[in-house]
Every structure is written in C-alpha cells, then in structure tokens.
Image 1 (cartoon, rainbow, N blue to C red):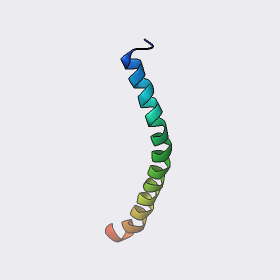
Image 2: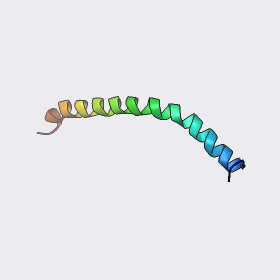
Image 3: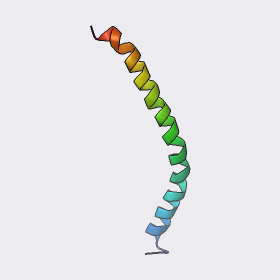
Image 4: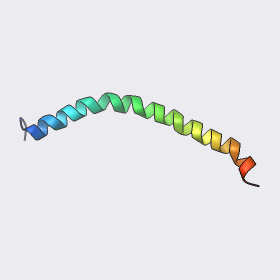
Length: 48
C-alpha cells in the first residue's frame, strides 16, 4: 500500500508524533510524581 494517500498520512503522522512523544512523556512523569507527593502530604490532614 505504499504511495497511497493512507500510507502518506501514516508516515506524516508518525513524523509529527515522534517529537511530541519525546516531550510529553517526561513532563507527564514529573507531573504524576508531583501529584503523588502532594497527595501523600495532604492525606494525613484529610483522613482522620
């Protein structure tokens, strides 16, 4: 199916998606860690 519009769209999507995967992964990882630490620090005050 090479040289079809579907194949060209898949290749273009892969090229565009690669840099976004490299950037979004680490930033989401930091956000998840920050959310976890915040929840652990607040939990003793919420749970009696």
